[in-house]
Amino acid sequence: MISTKPLRFPKNFTWGVATAAPQIEGAAFEDGKGESVWDRFSRIPGKVLNGDTLDVANDHYHRYPQDFALMRKLGIKNYRLSLAWPRIYPNGDGEVNPAGIKFYNKLIDSCLKHGITPWVTIFHWDLPQALEDRGGWTSRVTVDAFATYAETVVKALGDRVKNWITLNEIRCFTVQGYSPGCDKAPGRRESAQVVNQTYHHALLCHGHAVKAVRTFGGKGARVGLTDNSAFSVPVTETPADIAAARAWYIDQNAHILEPIYTGRYSAAYLKRTGKDRPVVQKGDLELIGQPTDFLGLNIYTGQFIRAGKGKVRYEELALPADYPRTTCWWLNIMPQAIYWGARFPAEVYGAKAIYITENGCGYDVEPVVNDEVQDLHRRDYVRNYLRELHRAIADGVPVKGYFLWSFMDNFEWQDGYTRRFGIVHVDYKTQKRTPKLSAKWYSTVMAENRIV
Ligand code: NOJ
Image (cartoon, rainbow, N blue to C red; front, side, top):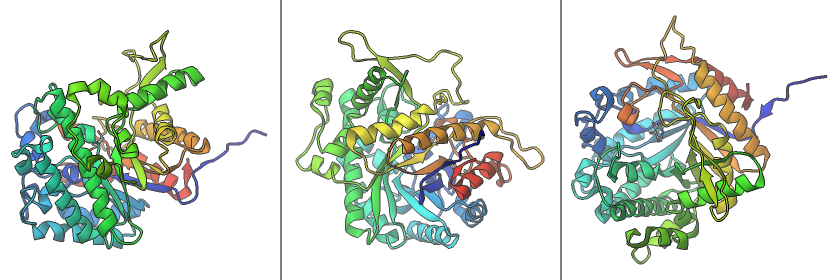
């Protein structure tokens, strides 16, 4: 007899949703919050689609109780959120803004009251503009300021927050903010050496945050980085293509995962960067290489790789014009990316606990008709990625959780409010929230701990 085998996830698998402060909070200049680099950048004509700003966003700053109530209604038990550094230190360092601490105390209390476990990202791209004015990520001033900020937030919230993420996607606020041709805040054009230095400074901040959690996080506190590694997918699942994809993965992630997991920059990385390598001070690599409790990965897409010929170890395959993608130019639909993206760090770096801290898709046209949004495209996208994640777990990859990006439509950086990633639709004129079909489907997945 033919039967359908349910694709169940392990007991205690963590299911959740994710957002980030600058993308949803709004209240950009309320209660003493300082300006962030994205507040500044979004005001430069031409930088953000339609000139959208973060000023109001989803007004979550005022509506969080209703948003948590909706999460509870959907059966969401874990919520990844971020703290806005300029809300807590309007100038980046110096005086703490008590209203900022008060807000996050209330937010965390409300989250817990709704039966939802918070997973807190300390930094999700909103650098205080005052620090950018003093050099931003090119300067160690930012590292020192971050160390104080991390300590402050862990001390303030650590009695209730037990899951900490140090930084979100280092590449997106370093190379994508400081390289020629980049499209993210602050939009500077720096040399290769300076850009490598920005990574190094971000890694130091990661180290400071780990230290803050270890020192002040209290019992049961856990900490890890969220990385958007470059993810490879072998064109065929044969030993030669898999080895090639693994070699590419190691080369591409040498500057971030290598120092975090081994406490050193690899010889190959140092050779490759030559005179552009980052300047490293005594003690830096020990700080960066402290053990963490998990690796967070934001996995959306990947790069197809096959074995090269002769001495060439691997070959990158360009995607044909008709390859399926979302409305985001960068988001090619490639479910296998989540399989290999989770498997390689376990194999290469020995990552013991992996959380998919983001996965999802963005589209522009998602109309509400009769109070419904039929986003079957998103439902299918997530379902196909979950099948590959399930395969990874079945193959022994230690994946412990999955957070869908995003709980609701929000400010998608340079794409403004045009691109929608939420499983809950947001009408920005009225701030009305409407759970999409994907939200209802995901509720069942979470409740039944299996793909439905
Ligand atoms: C990665 C980022 O962490 C998040 O802020 C962004 O909105 C999503 N990916 C979608 O692009």
